[in-house]
Length: 110
Image (cartoon, rainbow, N blue to C red):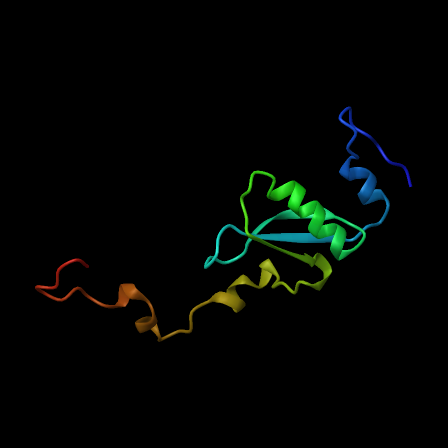
């Protein structure tokens, strides 16, 4: 495994990638009561190191109260080419959309 060091002594991400470490997706919760939001990705040899590296990379300015790391290969996704079949609204059910309804007379704040 070749490692590349930067002038400040840290190792570059390319050395981790070439070592074959798995890719991890990082989610950060900014405060209690909010959902975790995807913050980015990183390579790490295991979950513990992924959490430590995620803390250093994505919360160094005290942005979060909680971190999740998930192996990218464990995330199931839909295919963008199947967008129409996956997300198209059923025909004849326009009442499911807010634009179907008309504004009633005398109703304020709509």
